[in-house]
Length: 264
Length: 279
Image (cartoon, rainbow over all chains, first blue to last red; front, side):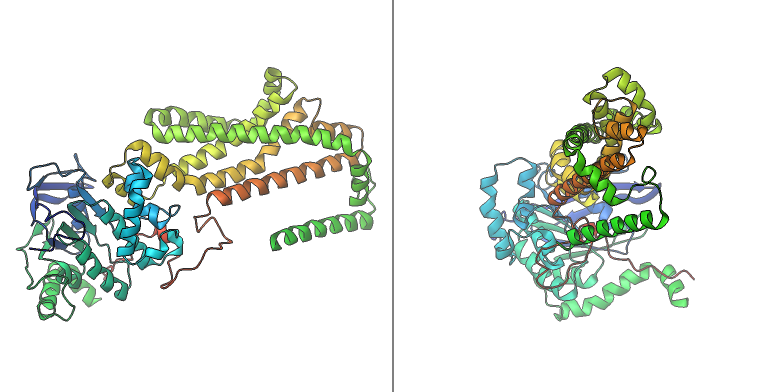
Protein backbone atom coordinates (compact mmCIF):
# COMPACT_ATOMS: atom_id res chain seq x y z
CA UNK A 1 0.00 0.00 0.00
CA UNK A 2 2.67 2.53 0.87
CA UNK A 3 6.11 3.14 -0.47
CA UNK A 4 8.45 0.57 0.96
CA UNK A 5 11.56 2.55 0.07
CA UNK A 6 13.54 5.10 2.05
CA UNK A 7 15.80 2.42 3.42
CA UNK A 8 13.04 1.15 5.64
CA UNK A 9 11.82 -2.41 5.72
CA UNK A 10 9.31 -3.50 3.11
CA UNK A 11 5.96 -2.81 4.74
CA UNK A 12 6.30 -3.47 8.44
CA UNK A 13 4.01 -6.00 10.17
CA UNK A 14 0.99 -4.86 12.11
CA UNK A 15 0.77 -4.77 15.86
CA UNK A 16 -1.96 -5.78 18.25
CA UNK A 17 -2.34 -4.79 21.88
CA UNK A 18 -4.70 -7.01 23.84
CA UNK A 19 -6.30 -6.48 27.15
CA UNK A 20 -4.18 -3.54 28.23
CA UNK A 21 -4.63 -2.69 31.91
CA UNK A 22 -3.05 0.20 33.71
CA UNK A 23 -3.41 1.59 37.19
CA UNK A 24 -1.75 4.88 38.08
CA UNK A 25 -1.89 6.11 41.68
CA UNK A 26 -4.79 3.79 42.37
CA UNK A 27 -6.78 5.09 39.42
CA UNK A 28 -7.74 2.56 36.76
CA UNK A 29 -6.65 4.39 33.57
CA UNK A 30 -6.94 1.49 31.15
CA UNK A 31 -8.97 -1.66 31.69
CA UNK A 32 -9.10 -4.37 29.08
CA UNK A 33 -8.29 -2.10 26.15
CA UNK A 34 -7.56 -3.55 22.70
CA UNK A 35 -5.57 -1.60 20.12
CA UNK A 36 -4.81 -2.54 16.54
CA UNK A 37 -2.07 -0.97 14.39
CA UNK A 38 -2.42 -1.87 10.70
CA UNK A 39 0.75 -2.97 8.88
CA UNK A 40 2.87 -0.19 7.42
CA UNK A 41 0.44 2.56 8.26
CA UNK A 42 0.07 5.48 10.64
CA UNK A 43 -2.40 5.16 13.48
CA UNK A 44 -3.09 8.40 15.31
CA UNK A 45 -4.27 8.26 18.88
CA UNK A 46 -6.24 11.32 19.91
CA UNK A 47 -7.70 12.15 23.26
CA UNK A 48 -7.98 14.79 25.97
CA UNK A 49 -4.92 15.23 28.16
CA UNK A 50 -4.69 12.85 31.06
CA UNK A 51 -6.79 10.16 29.42
CA UNK A 52 -3.88 7.73 29.22
CA UNK A 53 -2.59 8.15 25.65
CA UNK A 54 1.04 8.43 26.64
CA UNK A 55 0.68 5.62 29.17
CA UNK A 56 -0.70 3.38 26.45
CA UNK A 57 2.26 4.29 24.25
CA UNK A 58 4.69 3.58 27.07
CA UNK A 59 3.01 0.24 27.65
CA UNK A 60 3.47 -0.65 23.97
CA UNK A 61 7.10 0.49 24.19
CA UNK A 62 7.69 -1.72 27.22
CA UNK A 63 8.64 1.30 29.32
CA UNK A 64 6.05 0.41 31.93
CA UNK A 65 5.15 -3.09 32.96
CA UNK A 66 3.71 -5.12 35.80
CA UNK A 67 2.47 -4.57 38.40
CA UNK A 68 0.96 -1.24 37.37
CA UNK A 69 0.62 -2.07 33.67
CA UNK A 70 -0.25 -5.29 31.90
CA UNK A 71 -1.16 -6.23 28.37
CA UNK A 72 -0.06 -8.40 25.50
CA UNK A 73 1.76 -6.64 22.66
CA UNK A 74 1.89 -8.93 19.63
CA UNK A 75 3.43 -8.46 16.20
CA UNK A 76 1.67 -9.97 13.19
CA UNK A 77 4.76 -11.95 12.23
CA UNK A 78 4.83 -13.67 15.59
CA UNK A 79 8.31 -12.43 16.51
CA UNK A 80 8.89 -10.53 19.72
CA UNK A 81 8.23 -6.80 19.66
CA UNK A 82 10.96 -5.81 22.13
CA UNK A 83 14.02 -4.50 20.34
CA UNK A 84 12.06 -3.71 17.20
CA UNK A 85 10.57 -0.42 18.42
CA UNK A 86 11.78 3.11 17.92
CA UNK A 87 10.58 5.86 20.20
CA UNK A 88 10.38 9.60 19.70
CA UNK A 89 9.04 11.84 22.41
CA UNK A 90 7.81 15.39 22.72
CA UNK A 91 11.20 16.54 23.94
CA UNK A 92 14.02 15.86 21.52
CA UNK A 93 15.95 14.21 24.39
CA UNK A 94 19.23 14.99 22.64
CA UNK A 95 22.26 14.55 24.86
CA UNK A 96 23.73 18.05 25.10
CA UNK A 97 27.32 16.81 25.32
CA UNK A 98 27.15 14.91 22.02
CA UNK A 99 27.25 16.37 18.52
CA UNK A 100 24.24 15.97 16.24
CA UNK A 101 25.97 13.06 14.52
CA UNK A 102 26.76 11.26 17.77
CA UNK A 103 23.20 11.84 18.97
CA UNK A 104 21.95 10.14 15.84
CA UNK A 105 24.38 7.29 16.58
CA UNK A 106 23.30 7.10 20.23
CA UNK A 107 21.76 3.64 19.94
CA UNK A 108 24.95 2.20 18.48
CA UNK A 109 27.05 3.95 21.13
CA UNK A 110 24.91 2.58 23.96
CA UNK A 111 25.05 -0.92 22.53
CA UNK A 112 28.83 -0.54 22.11
CA UNK A 113 28.76 -1.17 18.38
CA UNK A 114 31.85 -0.23 16.35
CA UNK A 115 32.03 3.51 15.77
CA UNK A 116 33.07 3.58 12.13
CA UNK A 117 30.13 1.63 10.78
CA UNK A 118 27.31 3.98 11.69
CA UNK A 119 29.01 7.29 11.04
CA UNK A 120 28.31 7.43 7.31
CA UNK A 121 24.74 6.32 7.77
CA UNK A 122 24.25 8.94 10.48
CA UNK A 123 25.58 11.63 8.16
CA UNK A 124 23.34 10.42 5.35
CA UNK A 125 20.30 10.55 7.65
CA UNK A 126 21.22 14.03 8.86
CA UNK A 127 21.40 15.06 5.21
CA UNK A 128 17.95 13.59 4.67
CA UNK A 129 16.48 15.75 7.41
CA UNK A 130 18.29 18.77 5.96
CA UNK A 131 21.10 19.06 8.47
CA UNK A 132 24.06 17.86 6.40
CA UNK A 133 26.18 20.84 7.43
CA UNK A 134 25.34 20.70 11.17
CA UNK A 135 26.57 17.17 11.93
CA UNK A 136 29.28 18.44 14.28
CA UNK A 137 27.11 21.01 16.06
CA UNK A 138 26.18 20.54 19.70
CA UNK A 139 22.43 20.55 20.42
CA UNK A 140 22.65 23.94 22.15
CA UNK A 141 23.75 25.50 18.87
CA UNK A 142 20.66 24.17 17.11
CA UNK A 143 17.14 25.59 17.04
CA UNK A 144 14.17 23.67 18.44
CA UNK A 145 13.10 22.56 14.97
CA UNK A 146 16.62 21.43 14.08
CA UNK A 147 16.91 19.47 17.31
CA UNK A 148 13.66 17.66 16.63
CA UNK A 149 14.99 16.87 13.14
CA UNK A 150 18.07 15.32 14.73
CA UNK A 151 15.75 13.29 16.96
CA UNK A 152 13.88 12.15 13.85
CA UNK A 153 17.18 11.10 12.25
CA UNK A 154 18.03 9.21 15.45
CA UNK A 155 14.68 7.41 15.23
CA UNK A 156 15.34 6.51 11.58
CA UNK A 157 18.87 5.37 12.40
CA UNK A 158 17.46 2.49 14.38
CA UNK A 159 15.58 1.29 11.29
CA UNK A 160 12.86 -0.39 13.33
CA UNK A 161 9.56 -1.61 11.86
CA UNK A 162 7.51 -0.15 14.73
CA UNK A 163 7.73 3.54 15.50
CA UNK A 164 6.07 5.19 18.49
CA UNK A 165 5.71 8.95 18.41
CA UNK A 166 4.61 10.78 21.56
CA UNK A 167 3.49 14.25 20.49
CA UNK A 168 6.81 14.79 18.75
CA UNK A 169 5.76 18.04 17.08
CA UNK A 170 3.73 19.71 19.81
CA UNK A 171 6.56 21.86 21.20
CA UNK A 172 7.35 23.36 17.80
CA UNK A 173 6.06 26.54 16.19
CA UNK A 174 3.35 26.16 13.55
CA UNK A 175 5.58 26.51 10.49
CA UNK A 176 8.28 24.13 11.69
CA UNK A 177 5.61 21.69 12.81
CA UNK A 178 3.98 21.73 9.40
CA UNK A 179 7.30 21.03 7.64
CA UNK A 180 8.35 18.32 10.06
CA UNK A 181 5.00 16.52 9.87
CA UNK A 182 5.40 16.16 6.11
CA UNK A 183 9.01 15.05 6.48
CA UNK A 184 8.14 12.46 9.09
CA UNK A 185 5.30 11.09 6.95
CA UNK A 186 7.69 10.75 4.01
CA UNK A 187 10.59 9.26 5.96
CA UNK A 188 8.55 6.83 8.02
CA UNK A 189 6.45 5.53 5.13
CA UNK A 190 6.09 1.76 5.19
CA UNK A 191 6.56 1.47 8.92
CA UNK A 192 3.90 0.74 11.48
CA UNK A 193 3.56 4.02 13.31
CA UNK A 194 1.59 4.97 16.41
CA UNK A 195 1.35 8.71 16.87
CA UNK A 196 -0.06 10.13 20.08
CA UNK A 197 -1.33 13.67 19.73
CA UNK A 198 -3.91 16.04 21.13
CA UNK A 199 -4.13 18.00 17.91
CA UNK A 200 -6.98 16.79 15.64
CA UNK A 201 -5.43 18.62 12.69
CA UNK A 202 -2.19 16.71 13.09
CA UNK A 203 -4.05 13.41 13.30
CA UNK A 204 -6.06 14.26 10.17
CA UNK A 205 -2.94 15.22 8.25
CA UNK A 206 -0.89 12.16 9.16
CA UNK A 207 -3.16 9.25 10.08
CA UNK A 208 -4.29 6.40 7.91
CA UNK A 209 -6.56 5.68 10.83
CA UNK A 210 -7.54 7.90 13.72
CA UNK A 211 -8.52 6.54 17.10
CA UNK A 212 -10.11 8.61 19.82
CA UNK A 213 -9.42 7.57 23.37
CA UNK A 214 -11.88 8.86 25.97
CA UNK A 215 -13.30 8.17 29.39
CA UNK A 216 -12.03 6.61 32.59
CA UNK A 217 -11.10 3.82 32.25
CA UNK A 218 -10.38 4.90 28.70
CA UNK A 219 -12.18 3.38 25.71
CA UNK A 220 -11.42 3.58 22.01
CA UNK A 221 -14.11 4.79 19.63
CA UNK A 222 -14.55 3.33 16.14
CA UNK A 223 -11.54 4.27 13.99
CA UNK A 224 -11.90 7.22 11.66
CA UNK A 225 -10.40 6.72 8.19
CA UNK A 226 -9.81 9.97 6.27
CA UNK A 227 -9.70 9.79 2.46
CA UNK A 228 -6.45 9.88 0.51
CA UNK A 229 -2.91 9.08 1.52
CA UNK A 230 -1.12 11.12 4.18
CA UNK A 231 0.41 13.60 4.52
CA UNK A 232 -2.72 15.52 3.59
CA UNK A 233 -2.69 19.25 3.00
CA UNK A 234 -4.29 21.28 5.81
CA UNK A 235 -6.83 22.60 3.28
CA UNK A 236 -7.62 19.14 1.92
CA UNK A 237 -11.44 18.83 1.96
CA UNK A 238 -11.31 15.56 3.88
CA UNK A 239 -9.23 17.29 6.55
CA UNK A 240 -11.31 20.43 6.73
CA UNK A 241 -14.69 18.68 6.88
CA UNK A 242 -13.61 16.28 9.61
CA UNK A 243 -11.68 18.75 11.72
CA UNK A 244 -14.76 20.30 13.24
CA UNK A 245 -16.44 16.97 13.85
CA UNK A 246 -13.34 15.58 15.51
CA UNK A 247 -12.99 18.66 17.72
CA UNK A 248 -16.61 18.27 18.78
CA UNK A 249 -16.01 14.64 19.59
CA UNK A 250 -13.04 15.51 21.77
CA UNK A 251 -14.79 18.44 23.43
CA UNK A 252 -17.98 16.48 24.03
CA UNK A 253 -16.09 14.20 26.32
CA UNK A 254 -14.84 16.87 28.64
CA UNK A 255 -18.25 18.58 28.66
CA UNK A 256 -18.51 18.70 32.42
CA UNK A 257 -15.25 20.59 32.85
CA UNK A 258 -15.67 22.62 29.68
CA UNK A 259 -19.02 24.04 30.76
CA UNK A 260 -17.52 24.97 34.08
CA UNK A 261 -14.77 26.76 32.19
CA UNK A 262 -17.25 28.56 29.96
CA UNK A 263 -19.30 29.67 32.93
CA UNK A 264 -16.32 31.09 34.82
CA UNK B 1 40.56 38.95 30.75
CA UNK B 2 38.09 41.40 32.23
CA UNK B 3 37.60 38.86 35.00
CA UNK B 4 41.30 39.00 35.89
CA UNK B 5 41.23 42.78 35.86
CA UNK B 6 38.22 42.78 38.12
CA UNK B 7 39.93 40.45 40.57
CA UNK B 8 43.07 42.58 40.53
CA UNK B 9 40.96 45.67 41.19
CA UNK B 10 39.21 43.99 44.12
CA UNK B 11 42.55 42.90 45.60
CA UNK B 12 44.07 46.36 45.22
CA UNK B 13 40.97 47.98 46.74
CA UNK B 14 41.11 45.68 49.76
CA UNK B 15 44.82 46.34 50.27
CA UNK B 16 44.30 50.08 50.05
CA UNK B 17 41.43 49.96 52.55
CA UNK B 18 43.59 47.87 54.88
CA UNK B 19 46.52 50.33 54.73
CA UNK B 20 44.19 53.30 55.26
CA UNK B 21 42.55 51.57 58.23
CA UNK B 22 45.90 50.81 59.85
CA UNK B 23 47.23 54.34 59.35
CA UNK B 24 44.02 56.10 60.35
CA UNK B 25 43.47 54.14 63.57
CA UNK B 26 47.14 53.86 64.53
CA UNK B 27 46.79 50.21 65.56
CA UNK B 28 50.16 48.91 66.80
CA UNK B 29 51.83 46.62 64.23
CA UNK B 30 51.84 43.64 66.62
CA UNK B 31 48.04 43.73 66.56
CA UNK B 32 47.42 44.55 62.90
CA UNK B 33 50.35 45.23 60.58
CA UNK B 34 49.64 47.19 57.40
CA UNK B 35 50.05 45.65 53.95
CA UNK B 36 53.43 47.33 53.57
CA UNK B 37 54.71 45.65 56.74
CA UNK B 38 53.33 42.29 55.59
CA UNK B 39 54.97 42.78 52.20
CA UNK B 40 58.25 43.41 53.97
CA UNK B 41 57.84 40.18 55.96
CA UNK B 42 56.99 38.42 52.73
CA UNK B 43 60.22 39.38 51.00
CA UNK B 44 62.23 39.05 54.19
CA UNK B 45 62.40 35.25 54.13
CA UNK B 46 60.82 34.13 50.87
CA UNK B 47 62.49 30.71 51.00
CA UNK B 48 60.82 29.73 54.26
CA UNK B 49 57.36 30.78 53.08
CA UNK B 50 57.85 29.00 49.80
CA UNK B 51 58.98 25.77 51.45
CA UNK B 52 56.11 25.68 53.94
CA UNK B 53 53.71 26.84 51.23
CA UNK B 54 54.77 23.95 49.01
CA UNK B 55 54.09 21.48 51.84
CA UNK B 56 50.62 22.87 52.48
CA UNK B 57 49.94 23.01 48.75
CA UNK B 58 50.92 19.36 48.39
CA UNK B 59 48.63 18.39 51.29
CA UNK B 60 45.73 20.27 49.73
CA UNK B 61 46.22 18.85 46.24
CA UNK B 62 46.65 15.29 47.51
CA UNK B 63 43.58 15.66 49.72
CA UNK B 64 41.61 17.06 46.83
CA UNK B 65 42.61 14.22 44.55
CA UNK B 66 41.98 11.54 47.13
CA UNK B 67 38.69 13.05 48.34
CA UNK B 68 37.43 13.51 44.79
CA UNK B 69 38.40 9.97 43.86
CA UNK B 70 36.80 8.43 46.95
CA UNK B 71 33.74 10.68 46.83
CA UNK B 72 33.24 10.08 43.11
CA UNK B 73 33.67 6.33 43.46
CA UNK B 74 31.23 6.19 46.38
CA UNK B 75 28.62 8.16 44.45
CA UNK B 76 29.00 5.92 41.42
CA UNK B 77 28.78 2.78 43.54
CA UNK B 78 25.67 4.11 45.27
CA UNK B 79 24.05 4.89 41.93
CA UNK B 80 24.97 1.54 40.44
CA UNK B 81 24.12 -0.79 43.31
CA UNK B 82 21.09 -0.47 45.54
CA UNK B 83 22.57 -2.30 48.55
CA UNK B 84 25.61 -0.04 48.46
CA UNK B 85 23.35 2.99 48.57
CA UNK B 86 21.43 1.65 51.54
CA UNK B 87 24.58 0.89 53.51
CA UNK B 88 26.78 3.77 52.47
CA UNK B 89 24.26 6.61 52.73
CA UNK B 90 24.07 6.47 56.56
CA UNK B 91 27.87 6.39 56.71
CA UNK B 92 27.96 9.49 54.57
CA UNK B 93 25.47 11.30 56.78
CA UNK B 94 27.29 10.29 59.95
CA UNK B 95 30.60 11.44 58.49
CA UNK B 96 28.95 14.83 58.09
CA UNK B 97 27.38 14.91 61.54
CA UNK B 98 30.82 14.55 63.11
CA UNK B 99 32.75 17.82 63.03
CA UNK B 100 35.90 16.91 61.15
CA UNK B 101 37.92 19.33 63.26
CA UNK B 102 37.21 17.25 66.32
CA UNK B 103 38.85 14.34 64.57
CA UNK B 104 42.05 16.25 63.84
CA UNK B 105 43.87 15.31 67.08
CA UNK B 106 43.00 11.64 66.62
CA UNK B 107 44.15 11.71 63.03
CA UNK B 108 47.45 13.22 64.10
CA UNK B 109 47.73 10.55 66.78
CA UNK B 110 47.10 7.81 64.25
CA UNK B 111 48.87 9.13 61.20
CA UNK B 112 51.64 11.12 62.78
CA UNK B 113 52.88 14.66 62.46
CA UNK B 114 53.70 14.33 58.78
CA UNK B 115 51.79 14.67 55.55
CA UNK B 116 49.41 11.75 56.20
CA UNK B 117 47.20 13.29 58.85
CA UNK B 118 46.76 16.54 56.89
CA UNK B 119 45.92 14.76 53.66
CA UNK B 120 43.43 12.65 55.62
CA UNK B 121 41.84 15.80 57.07
CA UNK B 122 41.53 17.42 53.64
CA UNK B 123 40.18 14.17 52.18
CA UNK B 124 37.55 13.84 54.89
CA UNK B 125 36.40 17.40 54.46
CA UNK B 126 36.18 17.06 50.66
CA UNK B 127 34.61 13.64 50.53
CA UNK B 128 31.06 14.66 51.43
CA UNK B 129 30.50 17.60 49.06
CA UNK B 130 31.89 15.61 46.16
CA UNK B 131 30.03 12.39 46.93
CA UNK B 132 26.69 14.06 47.63
CA UNK B 133 26.89 16.37 44.62
CA UNK B 134 27.68 13.56 42.20
CA UNK B 135 25.15 11.22 43.76
CA UNK B 136 22.50 13.91 43.47
CA UNK B 137 23.43 14.50 39.86
CA UNK B 138 23.29 10.79 39.08
CA UNK B 139 19.84 10.52 40.59
CA UNK B 140 18.41 13.42 38.64
CA UNK B 141 18.86 12.23 35.12
CA UNK B 142 16.21 13.53 32.76
CA UNK B 143 13.65 10.67 32.64
CA UNK B 144 13.25 11.25 28.89
CA UNK B 145 16.90 10.23 28.42
CA UNK B 146 16.39 7.10 30.47
CA UNK B 147 13.28 6.13 28.48
CA UNK B 148 15.19 6.71 25.29
CA UNK B 149 18.13 4.61 26.47
CA UNK B 150 15.77 1.74 27.25
CA UNK B 151 14.10 1.81 23.85
CA UNK B 152 17.58 1.95 22.28
CA UNK B 153 18.49 -1.28 24.03
CA UNK B 154 21.05 0.14 26.47
CA UNK B 155 22.06 -2.01 29.46
CA UNK B 156 22.51 -0.60 32.95
CA UNK B 157 26.22 -0.08 32.57
CA UNK B 158 25.90 1.86 29.31
CA UNK B 159 23.10 3.96 30.76
CA UNK B 160 25.14 4.80 33.85
CA UNK B 161 28.41 5.55 32.10
CA UNK B 162 27.15 7.17 28.92
CA UNK B 163 24.05 8.99 30.06
CA UNK B 164 23.75 9.37 33.82
CA UNK B 165 27.43 10.11 34.48
CA UNK B 166 27.92 12.80 31.81
CA UNK B 167 24.55 14.28 32.77
CA UNK B 168 25.76 14.51 36.39
CA UNK B 169 28.97 16.33 35.51
CA UNK B 170 27.59 19.83 36.09
CA UNK B 171 26.43 18.81 39.58
CA UNK B 172 29.75 17.05 40.17
CA UNK B 173 31.47 20.26 39.07
CA UNK B 174 29.63 22.30 41.73
CA UNK B 175 30.70 19.76 44.35
CA UNK B 176 34.27 19.99 43.11
CA UNK B 177 34.24 23.78 43.38
CA UNK B 178 33.06 23.56 46.99
CA UNK B 179 35.73 20.93 47.62
CA UNK B 180 38.46 23.15 46.22
CA UNK B 181 37.31 25.97 48.47
CA UNK B 182 37.25 23.91 51.69
CA UNK B 183 40.29 21.70 51.08
CA UNK B 184 42.76 24.27 52.51
CA UNK B 185 40.73 24.37 55.73
CA UNK B 186 41.34 20.68 56.29
CA UNK B 187 45.06 20.92 55.64
CA UNK B 188 45.59 23.99 57.85
CA UNK B 189 43.55 22.66 60.75
CA UNK B 190 45.63 19.50 60.56
CA UNK B 191 48.76 21.59 60.74
CA UNK B 192 47.48 23.55 63.73
CA UNK B 193 46.85 20.43 65.72
CA UNK B 194 50.26 18.94 65.19
CA UNK B 195 52.89 19.51 62.56
CA UNK B 196 56.50 20.47 62.06
CA UNK B 197 56.03 22.18 58.73
CA UNK B 198 53.43 23.82 56.53
CA UNK B 199 51.80 27.24 56.48
CA UNK B 200 49.49 26.46 59.39
CA UNK B 201 52.47 25.49 61.53
CA UNK B 202 54.36 28.60 60.41
CA UNK B 203 51.45 30.90 61.24
CA UNK B 204 50.91 29.30 64.62
CA UNK B 205 54.59 29.76 65.47
CA UNK B 206 54.62 33.36 64.26
CA UNK B 207 51.45 34.11 66.22
CA UNK B 208 52.93 32.69 69.42
CA UNK B 209 55.95 34.93 69.01
CA UNK B 210 53.82 38.00 68.28
CA UNK B 211 55.30 38.16 64.77
CA UNK B 212 51.96 39.16 63.40
CA UNK B 213 53.43 40.48 60.16
CA UNK B 214 54.86 37.01 59.46
CA UNK B 215 51.56 35.44 60.31
CA UNK B 216 49.85 37.64 57.78
CA UNK B 217 52.52 36.85 55.21
CA UNK B 218 51.73 33.16 55.69
CA UNK B 219 48.05 33.91 55.44
CA UNK B 220 48.64 35.77 52.19
CA UNK B 221 50.52 32.83 50.68
CA UNK B 222 47.72 30.52 51.79
CA UNK B 223 45.12 32.80 50.22
CA UNK B 224 47.00 32.93 46.91
CA UNK B 225 47.35 29.17 47.02
CA UNK B 226 43.65 28.61 47.71
CA UNK B 227 42.41 31.11 45.15
CA UNK B 228 44.79 29.72 42.53
CA UNK B 229 43.59 26.21 43.21
CA UNK B 230 39.98 27.28 43.04
CA UNK B 231 40.42 28.92 39.66
CA UNK B 232 42.30 25.91 38.35
CA UNK B 233 39.50 23.58 39.41
CA UNK B 234 36.90 26.01 38.10
CA UNK B 235 38.61 26.13 34.70
CA UNK B 236 38.79 22.33 34.59
CA UNK B 237 35.10 22.03 35.48
CA UNK B 238 34.16 24.54 32.79
CA UNK B 239 36.12 22.58 30.23
CA UNK B 240 34.41 19.38 31.29
CA UNK B 241 30.90 20.84 31.07
CA UNK B 242 31.32 23.21 28.15
CA UNK B 243 28.19 21.72 26.56
CA UNK B 244 26.04 22.75 29.50
CA UNK B 245 24.38 26.09 28.86
CA UNK B 246 23.57 26.66 32.53
CA UNK B 247 27.01 26.06 34.01
CA UNK B 248 28.85 28.01 31.35
CA UNK B 249 27.91 31.63 31.79
CA UNK B 250 30.41 33.03 29.34
CA UNK B 251 29.23 30.95 26.40
CA UNK B 252 31.03 31.43 23.13
CA UNK B 253 29.17 29.08 20.84
CA UNK B 254 27.46 30.09 17.66
CA UNK B 255 23.90 31.19 18.32
CA UNK B 256 21.01 29.21 16.85
CA UNK B 257 20.70 29.66 13.11
CA UNK B 258 17.00 30.38 12.81
CA UNK B 259 14.39 30.21 15.54
CA UNK B 260 15.69 31.17 18.96
CA UNK B 261 16.24 28.15 21.16
CA UNK B 262 14.57 28.04 24.52
CA UNK B 263 17.13 28.64 27.23
CA UNK B 264 16.45 25.41 29.04
CA UNK B 265 16.20 23.20 26.00
CA UNK B 266 17.34 19.91 27.43
CA UNK B 267 15.22 20.26 30.54
CA UNK B 268 12.19 21.24 28.53
CA UNK B 269 9.10 19.37 29.52
CA UNK B 270 5.64 19.56 28.08
CA UNK B 271 4.39 23.03 27.27
CA UNK B 272 1.93 24.37 29.78
CA UNK B 273 -1.24 22.40 29.35
CA UNK B 274 -4.44 24.38 29.17
CA UNK B 275 -6.06 24.06 32.52
CA UNK B 276 -9.73 24.71 32.94
CA UNK B 277 -10.24 27.70 35.20
CA UNK B 278 -11.60 26.64 38.50
CA UNK B 279 -15.04 28.13 38.88
